[in-house]
Length: 137
Image 1 (cartoon, rainbow, N blue to C red):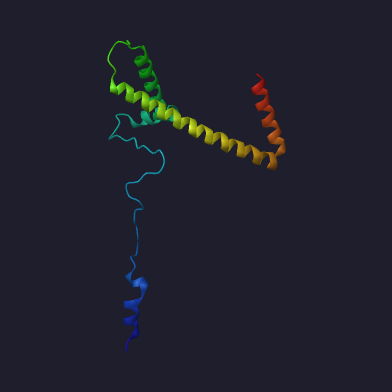
Image 2: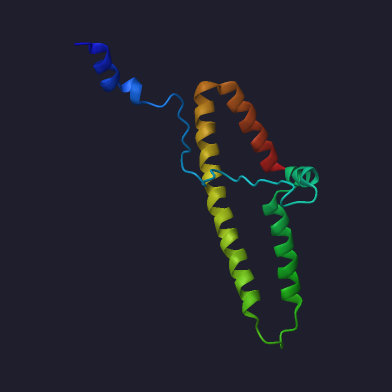
């Protein structure tokens, strides 16, 4: 009996593909990734440069602030608009999220300062002194 023929049948390498490419979580994006291409922008290079200096969030925030200012200046005797109420609610929710994450950043900073105090006391004293000077000013 020729065992080499049997070996080819049950050898796992014989059944495995030579190359294997399999997308993990197709259609998912992690992080704030926005693809700017010729399909969605007339000038992708310009748009990328603008976003590098002024994120979409910052741009939308400024537009929202301007709209809210106009809404506040609106005559009070005009009927309420649900669209304005929805924009104001969105703005308040975004501000709450910003405050929550600011608190997270402060806690992280405190933790880093505690670590720095132990690992590099000179650097800690320099930073603490600078912060104290800023607080007095």
